Image (cartoon, rainbow, N blue to C red):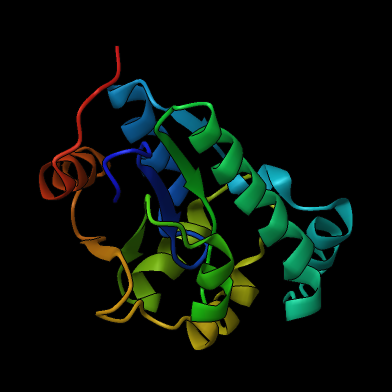
Length: 172
């Protein structure tokens, strides 16, 4: 991260890993801007996923552009921020990559995530698409500004882990 731009964290990974929960907790604890990336999906994407169909690159591109715009607007406003976005492939992260962006992968096995998805209520993403998300996931490489946070921790422990590892400070 550059000294001149406030940090923006992109919580990434397959659906059901807890991105929204952990990202919102972290943003609240630090008093940072927060955006639920799923809320930025075009209605057609939501309908497609709700019908049990995985998004393709053509579907994702407008959504990734909106997520990137949120990152740019938050940075331009001088505020640190936290946003959720699956960002499963490197080329998707390339659209979002900025000097001040750190990707936070909530990392765990498909069986654990499937159990979480089966308990989740009211979300458009059906558990049936989980396998396609894990098949699509390209773990960030060593040349990417990213950390992995284990799913075997509680959300509170995950928040503390991110704060400690990235040496994050709350805003006034």
